[in-house]
Amino acid sequence: MTLLNLKVALKVARELRINASCVELVRARKEHRCKKCEQPIIKGEYYYCVYIGGGLGALKFPDRYHIECQE
View (cartoon, rainbow, N blue to C red):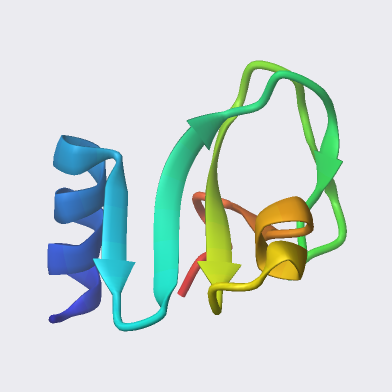
């Protein structure tokens, strides 16, 4: 899948599962920090929540990215 296909799939389905990871498009209920640019994700803004692996740590502490920062 290309990057454009991934973004289109996420906007339509809101969640995309690839192997053991999951990418989800979420609206922030509180402020978070972007993993890539270290800038805050403002409350109410949409961002990508990435769960890598299937363990409890991945569910409790997912990687969060701005829509612009996700590769």
